[in-house]
Length: 262
Image (tube, rainbow, N blue to C red; front, side):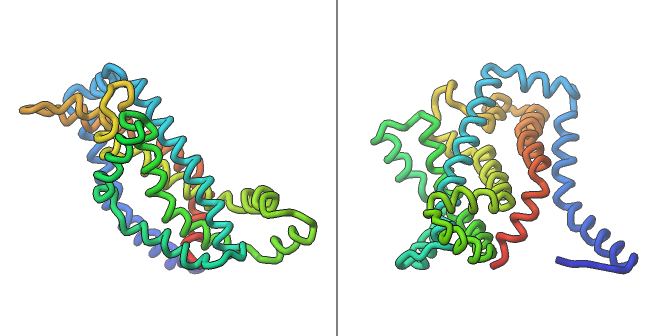
């Protein structure tokens, strides 16, 4: 992390950080401006009036919340085992999990479709929740393991001396100490699950199971497209993610910085 003590150094760092942020802020500004073109705020009203909008929003909340819970439980238990428990061949299993980072969801689409159809999960939220959670776990395990490796081993040894087993050690040590990295995992999982378009498009066919990311389809036809409504849909879709990040900003930055460095 860069640190400047002089006033000129602080101004320089602030100026560089601002310039680096401009390319990322400009598309957001363009999206908001585009959503207000034409009929202005009426664009947002027409998006909200889409039949089933509240149902799509609820489905997205269920999907994202379920994925977050699954990713958190699997990630923290796996990271605890890889970082602090004496497991046979744990490095082998850890690198096997990291190898899953090389598998994009497009490659897995056909086997996942066949599996979902064979076990009766097709056209259900579980057909989307389980693959999305599985794709998020490898990177989350990498962050959480690195974070836990920075926790002193003396804390875990003291817990063992006091008679705590692995379950109690996980509950009373790992869960409270990993709140910063947990916030980072929650944000990453929320973004991945909330914004996913491919899996809901393929696995969810009934209108009752659709998610918020498919709302723009209502404004895109075979020969015409109302891009102002599409932009308004994108802005409304992004609001929950922005709110979640603002609520967990401090923990997210601390966890990401600590979990990214071994």
